[in-house]
Structures are given as C-alpha cells and as structure tokens.
Image (tube, rainbow, N blue to C red; front, side, top):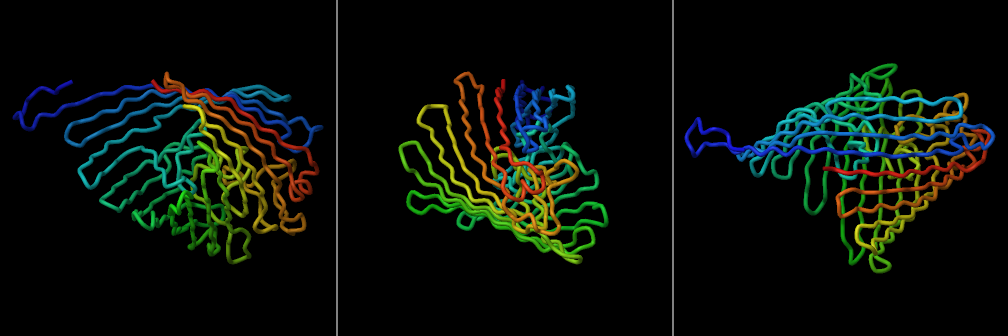
Length: 391
C-alpha cells in the first residue's frame, strides 16, 4: 500500500506488509536415557510450535519485524503424562539499512558463524532471541544486549560482541559476557576466530577460541577448537572428517572449563545432544548425500571422551548431564575419560509445497566413564520425526 502524500512527492514512502505463519510439529522418543533397560525412564515428547508474524518494508531502507510464538511440549512417561507451554513475542525490531551499514534495535535473533558460541537454538521449541542493538559498517559489526526469550533465562546475563569479517582470514570476534554466578560475578571475555579455506576439492573450516576473565571468583583460562575437512567422494556425496575439543577442569584459583556461552548445540557433537563444547574431545566421520532433489541423507559416527576426567560431562544445555542421584562428574578422575560412541542417521525432504519432513535416529553406546557413574551399560536410543512449514 502507498501512504498518503502528505509531504512532497519526492519524499513519499512506500510500505509493503508481508504477513506469514509458521508451524512445526516434532515427535521425539528417548529409550534407555539412564543406560539401563530395567530402570524405565523412557520418554516421548510431542513438541508443537506456532508462529505468526509480519515483515514490514519501507522504501527508504527501513524495515521492521513483529513475531509472536506459542510453544507446547506434551510428554508421556511410565510415571506420568502432562504438558507445558510458553508464549512470547519472539522478535520485535526496527532496522535501518544504508550501504555499507545497518542498525537494528529491539528483540532479534543473533547468530555467529556455525553458532558454536552464539545462536538462536531454533531446534528448541522456545528459540533464543536477544533484546538490544546491532550495528554493522563494512567489514565491522557490533552488538550488545541481554536474553529476551530463552529456556532457563538468566535475568542478569548481559552480552556484547565486536566482529571483523575478512574475506581471506574469516571472522574475528571479541565477545564479552557478564552474569551473576552462584558464588560471585562472571565476567568472561572470548576471542574467537572462524575461517573457511578451499584446497582443491576439499573445503576446510576451522574455529578457535581463547577465554580469560573471572568466573565465580576464579580466574577463567580456557580454550576450544574445531576443525573439519569436507570432500566429494561420489556424485552428490560428501565425506567429512571432523575434530572438536574444549578445555576442562581447574583448581581452587583457576577455572579451565570452557564456557561455550549461548550456542545452538544441536547436532554439532552428535544428534542425541549429549555433549557440549565443554571439557570434551570429539572425533567424527560424516557422509552426506543429495542424489535426489530436495532429499538430504546423512550418517555420522562420533568418538567422545572427556578432556579432564575430574570435570563433568556437559550436555547440549551447557549443564552437567543428570544421572540417578546426581550428575555425571567424578572429582577423583578415577572413572576415566571414555564417554562412548554415537552413531547417527538423519534425512530431510523439502517438498515443492514448501514444507519439510525430517527424521533421525541416534544410538549411543556408553563408555567406561558413563558406565561407572550410572552403574549401567545399555545403549541409549533417540529418534525424532518432524514436519515444518511456513506460509
């Protein structure tokens, strides 16, 4: 529609309004999550998420977005059935763009690189967004804010980042995190470098991060890195070999457990989401096939160990994985480093109508560390079936 020309014609604004709706349904099943076939903790979840929103464009570089979100989890276990739900404005921002820069103010999603440190966690029903400001100019970008929508949102957390993107070296970031910890303040600074290089038919992507500052009264001294090589082996088929590592442990005065901030961890270190980029080693082999239009098939195998056997096994949420009677941590280190192996299969099909079907299954065989602390050695199985569409 055209706004009335209340001002001279050469200053007239043209506004375009684009409403949309999005629906996503996902059924998940966890079998033997305690690694025991005799302790029945099996669980099924039906995750439903519905969004309605509007994108507004003005012909002078001004845009806006308003999006409302409703999310529900209906679950079934042997002990009980039930449901939880959440509703919120997931995005509400105003953006002005004028080459070579832009400014965005309001509630928005912020994603950096492969989202190993900062991401929107779209896999979760209640995806993450930030309240704050974001500005870019040429190769530079800066943003600052606090969590607006998130699972287990810490009200005191504040974040900020300064990023420089270079066509040759990749993206260099300085990220600052402030929060109120359990014992004292958390002021962690992270320097992160992401790069992608092409060598013949092989694509290599790498990321490295170093941390310093203070964490609950202790000095923060930690690091993490990622390295992956991808190369075609057959028509429409890629083979990938990958390694990930992050420091852990520490002493009375120093924390060496890497803080992977607010990432989108899903499927980065295994489809079952049992491991985060914290106190870990991960060696993975992946095969991806796109022989048929709209269909993507992937299989992967992960070998997972702890970096420091006296530190915890951290899950995708960033917290120590729970077990009967506590969490997966052995301060003595006597339970070893071996977490186990994970084998994953997944597929997704994008239909011509615009919807996408996806499914996946994961098999995790616990290693010595998990067996010693859980007292069980059964395989954990996880699977899902999902449909998503946008109108």
